Length: 558
Image 1 (spheres, rainbow, N blue to C red):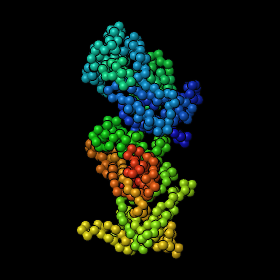
Image 2 (tube, one colour; image 1 turned 30 degrees about the vertical axis):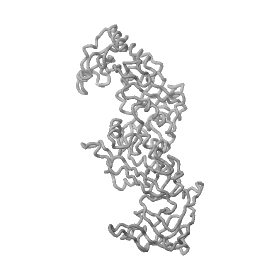
Image 3 (tube, one colour; image 1 turned 45 degrees about the vertical axis):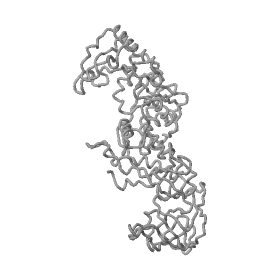
Protein backbone atom coordinates (compact mmCIF):
# COMPACT_ATOMS: atom_id res chain seq x y z
CA UNK A 1 0.00 0.00 0.00
CA UNK A 2 1.47 3.30 -1.05
CA UNK A 3 0.60 5.86 1.60
CA UNK A 4 3.23 8.37 0.49
CA UNK A 5 0.61 10.94 -0.56
CA UNK A 6 -1.66 10.40 2.45
CA UNK A 7 -0.79 12.12 5.72
CA UNK A 8 -2.49 10.84 8.85
CA UNK A 9 -1.91 10.88 12.58
CA UNK A 10 -0.52 7.32 12.77
CA UNK A 11 2.22 8.24 10.30
CA UNK A 12 3.08 11.31 12.35
CA UNK A 13 3.27 9.21 15.54
CA UNK A 14 5.58 6.68 13.90
CA UNK A 15 7.82 9.36 12.42
CA UNK A 16 8.07 11.08 15.81
CA UNK A 17 8.88 7.78 17.55
CA UNK A 18 11.60 7.06 15.02
CA UNK A 19 13.02 10.58 15.37
CA UNK A 20 13.04 10.30 19.18
CA UNK A 21 14.79 6.90 19.08
CA UNK A 22 11.91 5.05 20.73
CA UNK A 23 12.17 2.04 18.41
CA UNK A 24 15.87 1.49 17.70
CA UNK A 25 15.23 -1.95 16.19
CA UNK A 26 12.67 -0.50 13.82
CA UNK A 27 8.89 -0.35 14.01
CA UNK A 28 7.04 -3.61 14.49
CA UNK A 29 3.31 -3.94 13.82
CA UNK A 30 0.91 -6.87 13.59
CA UNK A 31 -2.42 -7.82 12.08
CA UNK A 32 -4.19 -9.95 14.75
CA UNK A 33 -7.42 -11.52 13.44
CA UNK A 34 -9.45 -14.06 15.38
CA UNK A 35 -9.89 -17.24 13.31
CA UNK A 36 -13.66 -17.40 13.80
CA UNK A 37 -14.87 -15.92 10.52
CA UNK A 38 -13.87 -14.48 7.16
CA UNK A 39 -12.18 -11.15 6.60
CA UNK A 40 -14.19 -8.23 5.25
CA UNK A 41 -13.50 -4.78 3.79
CA UNK A 42 -13.06 -3.35 7.29
CA UNK A 43 -10.20 -5.75 7.91
CA UNK A 44 -8.63 -4.62 4.65
CA UNK A 45 -8.20 -1.16 6.17
CA UNK A 46 -6.34 -2.65 9.16
CA UNK A 47 -4.26 -4.94 6.95
CA UNK A 48 -3.20 -2.09 4.67
CA UNK A 49 -2.35 0.10 7.64
CA UNK A 50 -0.29 -2.43 9.59
CA UNK A 51 1.57 -3.97 6.66
CA UNK A 52 1.75 -0.64 4.86
CA UNK A 53 3.38 1.22 7.74
CA UNK A 54 5.87 -1.59 8.31
CA UNK A 55 6.84 -1.59 4.65
CA UNK A 56 7.09 2.19 4.39
CA UNK A 57 9.34 2.52 7.43
CA UNK A 58 11.42 -0.61 6.78
CA UNK A 59 9.93 -2.40 9.75
CA UNK A 60 8.20 -5.72 10.32
CA UNK A 61 4.59 -6.83 10.46
CA UNK A 62 3.40 -10.10 11.99
CA UNK A 63 0.32 -12.08 11.12
CA UNK A 64 -0.98 -13.41 14.41
CA UNK A 65 -4.12 -15.36 15.09
CA UNK A 66 -5.64 -14.49 18.46
CA UNK A 67 -7.14 -17.93 18.90
CA UNK A 68 -8.40 -18.08 22.49
CA UNK A 69 -12.01 -19.19 21.88
CA UNK A 70 -12.03 -22.87 20.85
CA UNK A 71 -15.83 -22.94 20.54
CA UNK A 72 -15.83 -20.74 17.43
CA UNK A 73 -12.40 -21.12 15.84
CA UNK A 74 -11.46 -23.38 12.97
CA UNK A 75 -8.48 -24.13 10.74
CA UNK A 76 -10.57 -23.23 7.67
CA UNK A 77 -10.66 -19.62 8.86
CA UNK A 78 -6.90 -19.60 9.40
CA UNK A 79 -6.35 -20.76 5.83
CA UNK A 80 -8.91 -18.35 4.38
CA UNK A 81 -7.41 -15.38 6.24
CA UNK A 82 -3.90 -16.19 5.05
CA UNK A 83 -5.17 -16.46 1.48
CA UNK A 84 -6.94 -13.10 1.74
CA UNK A 85 -3.90 -11.30 3.17
CA UNK A 86 -1.67 -12.70 0.43
CA UNK A 87 -4.25 -11.81 -2.22
CA UNK A 88 -4.26 -8.22 -0.98
CA UNK A 89 -0.55 -8.17 -1.71
CA UNK A 90 1.10 -8.50 1.70
CA UNK A 91 3.62 -10.97 3.11
CA UNK A 92 4.39 -11.72 6.76
CA UNK A 93 7.53 -13.65 5.72
CA UNK A 94 8.48 -15.97 8.63
CA UNK A 95 6.37 -14.11 11.18
CA UNK A 96 3.24 -16.24 11.41
CA UNK A 97 2.18 -16.54 15.04
CA UNK A 98 -0.70 -17.92 17.10
CA UNK A 99 -1.76 -16.81 20.56
CA UNK A 100 -2.26 -20.51 21.31
CA UNK A 101 1.52 -20.89 21.03
CA UNK A 102 1.74 -18.68 24.12
CA UNK A 103 -0.71 -20.60 26.32
CA UNK A 104 2.03 -21.77 28.69
CA UNK A 105 3.53 -18.26 28.95
CA UNK A 106 0.09 -16.75 29.50
CA UNK A 107 -0.64 -19.25 32.25
CA UNK A 108 2.66 -18.26 33.90
CA UNK A 109 1.70 -14.57 33.63
CA UNK A 110 -1.60 -15.35 35.35
CA UNK A 111 0.22 -17.19 38.14
CA UNK A 112 2.51 -14.17 38.57
CA UNK A 113 -0.51 -11.91 39.07
CA UNK A 114 -1.94 -14.29 41.67
CA UNK A 115 1.39 -14.40 43.51
CA UNK A 116 1.40 -10.60 43.63
CA UNK A 117 -2.11 -10.62 45.09
CA UNK A 118 -3.43 -9.02 41.91
CA UNK A 119 -5.65 -11.85 40.70
CA UNK A 120 -8.11 -14.17 42.42
CA UNK A 121 -10.28 -17.18 41.68
CA UNK A 122 -13.96 -16.28 41.74
CA UNK A 123 -16.99 -18.56 42.13
CA UNK A 124 -19.62 -16.03 41.08
CA UNK A 125 -21.74 -17.04 38.09
CA UNK A 126 -21.70 -14.92 34.94
CA UNK A 127 -25.09 -13.48 35.88
CA UNK A 128 -23.90 -12.60 39.39
CA UNK A 129 -20.78 -10.94 37.96
CA UNK A 130 -22.98 -8.70 35.84
CA UNK A 131 -24.99 -7.73 38.93
CA UNK A 132 -21.86 -7.01 40.96
CA UNK A 133 -20.22 -5.07 38.14
CA UNK A 134 -22.37 -1.98 38.47
CA UNK A 135 -23.20 0.46 35.69
CA UNK A 136 -21.74 3.54 34.05
CA UNK A 137 -23.29 5.63 36.84
CA UNK A 138 -23.06 3.17 39.75
CA UNK A 139 -19.86 1.60 41.13
CA UNK A 140 -19.40 -2.13 41.25
CA UNK A 141 -19.42 -4.31 44.36
CA UNK A 142 -16.52 -6.50 45.44
CA UNK A 143 -16.96 -10.22 44.98
CA UNK A 144 -17.15 -12.16 48.28
CA UNK A 145 -14.23 -14.22 46.95
CA UNK A 146 -12.03 -11.19 46.23
CA UNK A 147 -9.89 -11.58 49.35
CA UNK A 148 -9.05 -15.27 49.06
CA UNK A 149 -5.49 -15.89 50.27
CA UNK A 150 -2.81 -16.13 47.59
CA UNK A 151 -2.08 -19.76 48.39
CA UNK A 152 -5.76 -20.70 48.01
CA UNK A 153 -5.97 -18.85 44.69
CA UNK A 154 -2.87 -20.62 43.39
CA UNK A 155 -4.24 -23.99 44.42
CA UNK A 156 -7.65 -23.38 42.85
CA UNK A 157 -6.15 -22.01 39.63
CA UNK A 158 -3.91 -25.05 39.19
CA UNK A 159 -6.85 -27.33 39.89
CA UNK A 160 -8.83 -25.43 37.28
CA UNK A 161 -6.06 -26.21 34.82
CA UNK A 162 -6.09 -29.86 35.91
CA UNK A 163 -9.76 -30.13 35.00
CA UNK A 164 -11.29 -30.56 38.47
CA UNK A 165 -14.13 -28.06 37.91
CA UNK A 166 -17.01 -27.76 35.48
CA UNK A 167 -17.39 -25.08 32.83
CA UNK A 168 -18.37 -21.80 34.46
CA UNK A 169 -17.86 -23.07 37.99
CA UNK A 170 -14.80 -20.89 38.61
CA UNK A 171 -12.94 -18.11 36.83
CA UNK A 172 -9.76 -16.12 37.39
CA UNK A 173 -10.21 -12.36 37.70
CA UNK A 174 -7.71 -9.53 37.82
CA UNK A 175 -7.94 -7.58 41.10
CA UNK A 176 -8.01 -3.95 39.98
CA UNK A 177 -10.84 -1.63 41.12
CA UNK A 178 -14.56 -2.43 41.23
CA UNK A 179 -15.29 1.29 41.51
CA UNK A 180 -13.25 2.40 38.50
CA UNK A 181 -15.13 4.70 36.08
CA UNK A 182 -13.85 2.48 33.25
CA UNK A 183 -15.89 -0.73 33.46
CA UNK A 184 -13.05 -2.69 31.83
CA UNK A 185 -11.03 -2.20 35.05
CA UNK A 186 -13.68 -3.65 37.34
CA UNK A 187 -11.92 -6.94 38.04
CA UNK A 188 -12.17 -8.39 34.54
CA UNK A 189 -12.14 -12.14 33.99
CA UNK A 190 -8.79 -13.25 32.57
CA UNK A 191 -9.30 -17.05 32.52
CA UNK A 192 -12.39 -19.22 32.17
CA UNK A 193 -13.03 -22.95 32.08
CA UNK A 194 -14.00 -24.38 28.69
CA UNK A 195 -13.93 -28.14 28.19
CA UNK A 196 -13.70 -27.72 24.43
CA UNK A 197 -10.76 -29.07 22.41
CA UNK A 198 -8.72 -26.38 20.68
CA UNK A 199 -8.29 -26.66 16.91
CA UNK A 200 -4.49 -26.46 17.35
CA UNK A 201 -3.79 -27.41 20.98
CA UNK A 202 -6.23 -30.31 21.08
CA UNK A 203 -7.33 -31.33 24.57
CA UNK A 204 -4.18 -30.04 26.29
CA UNK A 205 -6.08 -27.19 27.94
CA UNK A 206 -9.47 -26.86 29.59
CA UNK A 207 -8.91 -23.27 30.69
CA UNK A 208 -8.44 -20.49 28.18
CA UNK A 209 -7.26 -16.89 28.57
CA UNK A 210 -9.63 -14.06 27.70
CA UNK A 211 -8.99 -11.92 24.64
CA UNK A 212 -8.03 -8.75 26.54
CA UNK A 213 -5.46 -10.61 28.61
CA UNK A 214 -4.03 -12.44 25.62
CA UNK A 215 -3.96 -9.64 23.08
CA UNK A 216 -1.67 -7.15 24.79
CA UNK A 217 0.65 -9.81 26.22
CA UNK A 218 1.02 -11.44 22.79
CA UNK A 219 2.02 -8.05 21.43
CA UNK A 220 4.62 -7.77 24.18
CA UNK A 221 5.98 -11.27 23.56
CA UNK A 222 6.38 -10.44 19.87
CA UNK A 223 8.16 -7.11 20.59
CA UNK A 224 5.46 -5.15 18.78
CA UNK A 225 6.16 -1.43 18.98
CA UNK A 226 2.90 -0.03 17.58
CA UNK A 227 -0.35 -1.82 18.37
CA UNK A 228 -2.76 -0.25 15.91
CA UNK A 229 -6.38 -0.90 16.89
CA UNK A 230 -9.82 0.41 16.00
CA UNK A 231 -11.53 2.87 18.32
CA UNK A 232 -13.65 0.18 19.99
CA UNK A 233 -10.49 -0.83 21.89
CA UNK A 234 -9.73 2.66 23.21
CA UNK A 235 -11.45 1.95 26.55
CA UNK A 236 -9.50 -1.30 26.79
CA UNK A 237 -6.11 0.42 26.62
CA UNK A 238 -5.93 1.19 30.39
CA UNK A 239 -6.50 -2.50 31.06
CA UNK A 240 -3.76 -3.48 28.60
CA UNK A 241 -1.41 -1.00 30.25
CA UNK A 242 -2.27 -2.44 33.68
CA UNK A 243 -1.31 -5.94 32.58
CA UNK A 244 1.97 -4.71 31.06
CA UNK A 245 2.76 -2.57 34.13
CA UNK A 246 2.23 -5.47 36.52
CA UNK A 247 4.03 -8.21 34.61
CA UNK A 248 7.61 -8.74 33.55
CA UNK A 249 7.20 -8.64 29.76
CA UNK A 250 10.02 -8.49 27.21
CA UNK A 251 8.65 -5.34 25.54
CA UNK A 252 6.10 -2.59 26.03
CA UNK A 253 3.82 -2.06 23.03
CA UNK A 254 2.07 1.27 22.60
CA UNK A 255 -1.52 1.17 21.42
CA UNK A 256 -2.97 3.76 19.05
CA UNK A 257 -6.59 3.73 17.93
CA UNK A 258 -8.17 4.77 14.66
CA UNK A 259 -11.76 4.88 13.44
CA UNK A 260 -13.03 1.60 12.04
CA UNK A 261 -14.46 1.47 8.55
CA UNK A 262 -18.20 2.07 8.28
CA UNK A 263 -19.28 1.50 4.70
CA UNK A 264 -22.69 2.51 3.42
CA UNK A 265 -25.14 0.00 1.90
CA UNK A 266 -23.70 -2.95 3.78
CA UNK A 267 -23.17 -4.38 7.25
CA UNK A 268 -19.81 -5.35 8.72
CA UNK A 269 -20.95 -6.88 11.99
CA UNK A 270 -19.67 -10.46 12.13
CA UNK A 271 -22.91 -11.57 13.76
CA UNK A 272 -25.00 -10.05 10.99
CA UNK A 273 -22.80 -11.46 8.25
CA UNK A 274 -23.23 -14.90 9.79
CA UNK A 275 -26.99 -14.34 9.83
CA UNK A 276 -26.98 -13.40 6.13
CA UNK A 277 -25.13 -16.60 5.24
CA UNK A 278 -26.91 -19.01 7.55
CA UNK A 279 -30.31 -17.47 6.77
CA UNK A 280 -29.85 -18.00 3.04
CA UNK A 281 -30.05 -14.30 2.20
CA UNK A 282 -26.81 -14.69 0.23
CA UNK A 283 -25.09 -17.65 -1.40
CA UNK A 284 -22.23 -18.07 1.04
CA UNK A 285 -19.30 -16.11 2.42
CA UNK A 286 -17.91 -15.48 -1.08
CA UNK A 287 -21.21 -14.27 -2.50
CA UNK A 288 -20.21 -11.26 -4.63
CA UNK A 289 -22.70 -9.08 -2.75
CA UNK A 290 -20.94 -9.72 0.56
CA UNK A 291 -18.36 -7.23 1.93
CA UNK A 292 -15.99 -10.13 2.66
CA UNK A 293 -12.67 -10.07 0.84
CA UNK A 294 -13.54 -13.41 -0.74
CA UNK A 295 -16.85 -11.95 -1.92
CA UNK A 296 -15.25 -8.80 -3.30
CA UNK A 297 -12.62 -10.89 -5.04
CA UNK A 298 -15.22 -13.13 -6.62
CA UNK A 299 -17.20 -10.11 -7.78
CA UNK A 300 -14.11 -8.86 -9.57
CA UNK A 301 -12.54 -6.25 -7.31
CA UNK A 302 -8.76 -6.24 -7.49
CA UNK A 303 -6.22 -6.03 -4.67
CA UNK A 304 -5.00 -2.74 -6.13
CA UNK A 305 -8.50 -1.23 -6.07
CA UNK A 306 -8.99 -2.18 -2.40
CA UNK A 307 -5.59 -0.78 -1.42
CA UNK A 308 -6.40 2.39 -3.34
CA UNK A 309 -9.74 2.67 -1.57
CA UNK A 310 -8.12 2.23 1.85
CA UNK A 311 -5.53 4.89 1.02
CA UNK A 312 -8.17 7.35 -0.18
CA UNK A 313 -10.41 7.12 2.88
CA UNK A 314 -7.45 7.83 5.14
CA UNK A 315 -7.36 7.52 8.93
CA UNK A 316 -9.20 9.57 11.51
CA UNK A 317 -10.00 9.40 15.20
CA UNK A 318 -13.72 9.95 14.57
CA UNK A 319 -16.21 7.40 13.31
CA UNK A 320 -17.53 8.37 9.89
CA UNK A 321 -19.55 6.67 7.19
CA UNK A 322 -17.84 6.11 3.87
CA UNK A 323 -19.91 6.47 0.71
CA UNK A 324 -20.01 3.15 -1.13
CA UNK A 325 -19.33 5.01 -4.37
CA UNK A 326 -15.74 5.58 -3.22
CA UNK A 327 -15.12 1.83 -3.36
CA UNK A 328 -16.81 1.63 -6.76
CA UNK A 329 -14.81 4.59 -8.06
CA UNK A 330 -11.56 2.86 -7.06
CA UNK A 331 -12.28 -0.18 -9.25
CA UNK A 332 -13.67 1.95 -12.10
CA UNK A 333 -10.53 4.08 -12.11
CA UNK A 334 -8.34 0.98 -12.37
CA UNK A 335 -10.37 -0.98 -14.90
CA UNK A 336 -10.98 2.09 -17.04
CA UNK A 337 -7.26 1.93 -17.80
CA UNK A 338 -6.52 -1.79 -17.64
CA UNK A 339 -9.62 -3.71 -18.75
CA UNK A 340 -9.80 -4.78 -22.42
CA UNK A 341 -13.04 -3.97 -24.21
CA UNK A 342 -15.43 -6.55 -25.55
CA UNK A 343 -19.03 -6.59 -26.78
CA UNK A 344 -21.81 -8.59 -25.18
CA UNK A 345 -25.57 -8.41 -25.42
CA UNK A 346 -27.40 -9.11 -22.18
CA UNK A 347 -31.00 -9.04 -23.45
CA UNK A 348 -30.82 -9.93 -27.13
CA UNK A 349 -33.08 -8.54 -29.87
CA UNK A 350 -32.67 -10.02 -33.33
CA UNK A 351 -31.69 -7.75 -36.25
CA UNK A 352 -31.75 -8.91 -39.87
CA UNK A 353 -29.97 -6.73 -42.44
CA UNK A 354 -32.04 -7.31 -45.57
CA UNK A 355 -29.61 -5.87 -48.08
CA UNK A 356 -26.54 -7.67 -46.69
CA UNK A 357 -25.63 -10.69 -48.85
CA UNK A 358 -26.94 -13.95 -47.43
CA UNK A 359 -23.70 -15.87 -47.83
CA UNK A 360 -21.30 -13.07 -46.87
CA UNK A 361 -19.32 -12.74 -43.66
CA UNK A 362 -16.47 -10.42 -42.79
CA UNK A 363 -14.05 -9.68 -39.99
CA UNK A 364 -13.94 -6.16 -38.64
CA UNK A 365 -11.05 -4.60 -36.74
CA UNK A 366 -11.84 -3.52 -33.19
CA UNK A 367 -9.60 -1.83 -30.63
CA UNK A 368 -9.03 -3.72 -27.40
CA UNK A 369 -8.80 -0.37 -25.65
CA UNK A 370 -9.74 2.95 -27.29
CA UNK A 371 -7.12 4.97 -25.35
CA UNK A 372 -4.31 2.42 -25.26
CA UNK A 373 -2.99 1.35 -28.68
CA UNK A 374 -0.46 -0.93 -26.96
CA UNK A 375 -3.31 -3.32 -26.11
CA UNK A 376 -3.71 -4.00 -29.82
CA UNK A 377 -6.77 -4.93 -31.83
CA UNK A 378 -8.94 -7.96 -32.46
CA UNK A 379 -11.18 -9.06 -35.30
CA UNK A 380 -14.87 -9.58 -34.71
CA UNK A 381 -17.18 -11.40 -37.15
CA UNK A 382 -20.06 -9.61 -38.87
CA UNK A 383 -22.92 -11.09 -40.89
CA UNK A 384 -26.48 -10.68 -42.04
CA UNK A 385 -28.10 -11.53 -38.70
CA UNK A 386 -27.09 -9.73 -35.50
CA UNK A 387 -28.30 -9.17 -31.98
CA UNK A 388 -28.54 -5.84 -30.17
CA UNK A 389 -29.88 -4.93 -26.74
CA UNK A 390 -33.63 -4.80 -26.36
CA UNK A 391 -33.26 -1.43 -24.62
CA UNK A 392 -31.56 -0.02 -27.71
CA UNK A 393 -34.80 -0.11 -29.68
CA UNK A 394 -38.00 1.83 -29.11
CA UNK A 395 -40.94 1.71 -31.49
CA UNK A 396 -42.47 5.03 -30.43
CA UNK A 397 -39.27 6.84 -29.59
CA UNK A 398 -39.13 10.41 -28.25
CA UNK A 399 -37.03 12.95 -30.08
CA UNK A 400 -34.07 12.62 -27.72
CA UNK A 401 -33.90 8.83 -27.94
CA UNK A 402 -30.67 8.45 -29.90
CA UNK A 403 -30.83 4.72 -30.47
CA UNK A 404 -32.69 2.58 -32.96
CA UNK A 405 -36.30 3.29 -33.92
CA UNK A 406 -38.37 2.89 -37.11
CA UNK A 407 -36.87 5.08 -39.83
CA UNK A 408 -33.86 6.09 -37.74
CA UNK A 409 -30.22 5.48 -38.54
CA UNK A 410 -27.58 4.44 -35.98
CA UNK A 411 -24.00 3.26 -36.02
CA UNK A 412 -23.04 -0.29 -35.14
CA UNK A 413 -19.78 -0.14 -33.21
CA UNK A 414 -16.79 -0.88 -35.52
CA UNK A 415 -19.21 -1.83 -38.32
CA UNK A 416 -21.78 0.09 -40.39
CA UNK A 417 -24.65 2.53 -40.26
CA UNK A 418 -28.00 0.73 -40.25
CA UNK A 419 -31.57 1.96 -40.58
CA UNK A 420 -34.65 0.26 -39.12
CA UNK A 421 -37.26 -0.36 -41.80
CA UNK A 422 -39.67 -2.88 -40.28
CA UNK A 423 -40.66 -4.26 -36.88
CA UNK A 424 -41.74 -7.91 -36.59
CA UNK A 425 -44.01 -8.61 -33.62
CA UNK A 426 -45.61 -11.58 -31.96
CA UNK A 427 -49.21 -11.69 -33.14
CA UNK A 428 -50.59 -12.68 -29.77
CA UNK A 429 -48.61 -10.57 -27.33
CA UNK A 430 -47.42 -7.72 -29.51
CA UNK A 431 -43.84 -8.23 -28.26
CA UNK A 432 -41.10 -7.15 -30.66
CA UNK A 433 -39.40 -10.26 -32.04
CA UNK A 434 -37.18 -8.97 -34.81
CA UNK A 435 -36.06 -5.84 -36.62
CA UNK A 436 -35.59 -5.70 -40.37
CA UNK A 437 -32.92 -3.19 -41.26
CA UNK A 438 -30.75 -2.02 -44.13
CA UNK A 439 -27.10 -1.02 -44.01
CA UNK A 440 -24.93 1.42 -45.91
CA UNK A 441 -21.90 -0.48 -47.32
CA UNK A 442 -19.99 2.80 -47.64
CA UNK A 443 -19.88 3.25 -43.86
CA UNK A 444 -17.61 0.30 -43.06
CA UNK A 445 -15.71 0.98 -39.86
CA UNK A 446 -18.48 3.27 -38.60
CA UNK A 447 -17.84 6.44 -40.60
CA UNK A 448 -19.78 7.91 -43.52
CA UNK A 449 -17.71 9.21 -46.47
CA UNK A 450 -20.29 11.90 -47.13
CA UNK A 451 -19.76 13.28 -43.65
CA UNK A 452 -23.24 12.63 -42.27
CA UNK A 453 -23.45 12.06 -38.55
CA UNK A 454 -25.53 9.82 -36.34
CA UNK A 455 -25.98 10.33 -32.62
CA UNK A 456 -26.36 6.72 -31.59
CA UNK A 457 -23.72 3.97 -31.49
CA UNK A 458 -24.83 0.48 -30.49
CA UNK A 459 -22.94 -2.63 -29.46
CA UNK A 460 -23.88 -5.92 -31.07
CA UNK A 461 -22.83 -9.51 -31.74
CA UNK A 462 -23.04 -11.69 -34.81
CA UNK A 463 -25.84 -14.25 -34.47
CA UNK A 464 -23.86 -17.03 -36.11
CA UNK A 465 -20.70 -16.53 -34.09
CA UNK A 466 -21.94 -15.33 -30.70
CA UNK A 467 -21.60 -17.65 -27.72
CA UNK A 468 -24.20 -18.17 -25.02
CA UNK A 469 -23.24 -16.98 -21.52
CA UNK A 470 -24.72 -16.25 -18.13
CA UNK A 471 -24.44 -12.75 -16.67
CA UNK A 472 -24.95 -12.09 -12.98
CA UNK A 473 -25.83 -8.45 -12.42
CA UNK A 474 -24.82 -7.60 -8.87
CA UNK A 475 -25.83 -4.43 -7.10
CA UNK A 476 -25.58 -3.12 -3.55
CA UNK A 477 -26.77 -5.58 -0.93
CA UNK A 478 -28.98 -3.05 0.87
CA UNK A 479 -31.37 -0.47 -0.54
CA UNK A 480 -30.63 2.11 2.18
CA UNK A 481 -27.33 3.69 3.12
CA UNK A 482 -27.44 2.65 6.79
CA UNK A 483 -29.49 -0.51 7.36
CA UNK A 484 -28.99 -0.21 11.13
CA UNK A 485 -30.51 3.24 11.32
CA UNK A 486 -34.04 3.60 12.66
CA UNK A 487 -36.31 1.04 14.23
CA UNK A 488 -36.77 -1.24 11.24
CA UNK A 489 -35.32 -4.74 11.10
CA UNK A 490 -32.03 -4.37 9.25
CA UNK A 491 -32.86 -7.38 7.06
CA UNK A 492 -35.96 -5.58 5.82
CA UNK A 493 -33.59 -3.14 4.11
CA UNK A 494 -32.10 -5.79 1.83
CA UNK A 495 -32.12 -4.71 -1.80
CA UNK A 496 -34.45 -7.05 -3.74
CA UNK A 497 -32.60 -6.10 -6.93
CA UNK A 498 -29.13 -6.93 -5.58
CA UNK A 499 -28.84 -9.86 -8.01
CA UNK A 500 -30.34 -10.46 -11.43
CA UNK A 501 -29.29 -13.57 -13.37
CA UNK A 502 -29.52 -13.51 -17.16
CA UNK A 503 -29.07 -16.92 -18.78
CA UNK A 504 -29.44 -16.02 -22.47
CA UNK A 505 -26.70 -13.46 -22.92
CA UNK A 506 -24.60 -13.47 -26.09
CA UNK A 507 -20.89 -12.66 -26.12
CA UNK A 508 -18.06 -12.25 -28.59
CA UNK A 509 -16.66 -15.70 -29.41
CA UNK A 510 -13.19 -15.11 -27.96
CA UNK A 511 -14.67 -14.42 -24.51
CA UNK A 512 -15.10 -18.16 -24.04
CA UNK A 513 -11.30 -18.32 -23.78
CA UNK A 514 -11.22 -15.95 -20.78
CA UNK A 515 -9.49 -17.11 -17.63
CA UNK A 516 -11.31 -17.16 -14.29
CA UNK A 517 -11.07 -13.72 -12.65
CA UNK A 518 -10.17 -12.05 -15.95
CA UNK A 519 -11.85 -8.66 -16.21
CA UNK A 520 -13.36 -6.83 -19.19
CA UNK A 521 -15.38 -3.81 -19.98
CA UNK A 522 -18.50 -4.90 -21.83
CA UNK A 523 -18.98 -1.82 -23.95
CA UNK A 524 -21.81 0.40 -22.75
CA UNK A 525 -22.77 -2.13 -20.05
CA UNK A 526 -20.17 -2.08 -17.30
CA UNK A 527 -17.15 -3.96 -16.01
CA UNK A 528 -17.44 -7.73 -15.78
CA UNK A 529 -15.32 -10.54 -14.36
CA UNK A 530 -15.21 -14.23 -15.27
CA UNK A 531 -16.51 -15.97 -12.16
CA UNK A 532 -13.65 -17.68 -10.34
CA UNK A 533 -15.81 -20.56 -9.06
CA UNK A 534 -18.38 -21.37 -11.75
CA UNK A 535 -16.45 -20.52 -14.92
CA UNK A 536 -16.42 -23.17 -17.66
CA UNK A 537 -15.48 -22.52 -21.32
CA UNK A 538 -18.69 -24.25 -22.40
CA UNK A 539 -20.71 -22.35 -19.79
CA UNK A 540 -19.20 -18.87 -19.37
CA UNK A 541 -20.35 -16.98 -16.29
CA UNK A 542 -19.61 -13.28 -15.92
CA UNK A 543 -20.18 -11.18 -12.81
CA UNK A 544 -20.87 -7.49 -13.17
CA UNK A 545 -18.38 -5.71 -10.94
CA UNK A 546 -19.78 -2.20 -11.36
CA UNK A 547 -21.70 -0.22 -13.91
CA UNK A 548 -19.85 2.32 -16.04
CA UNK A 549 -21.31 5.18 -14.02
CA UNK A 550 -22.66 5.60 -10.53
CA UNK A 551 -26.36 5.09 -11.14
CA UNK A 552 -27.10 5.45 -7.42
CA UNK A 553 -25.92 9.06 -7.47
CA UNK A 554 -28.88 9.96 -9.67
CA UNK A 555 -31.32 8.36 -7.24
CA UNK A 556 -29.84 10.02 -4.19
CA UNK A 557 -29.58 8.42 -0.77
CA UNK A 558 -32.59 6.18 -0.30
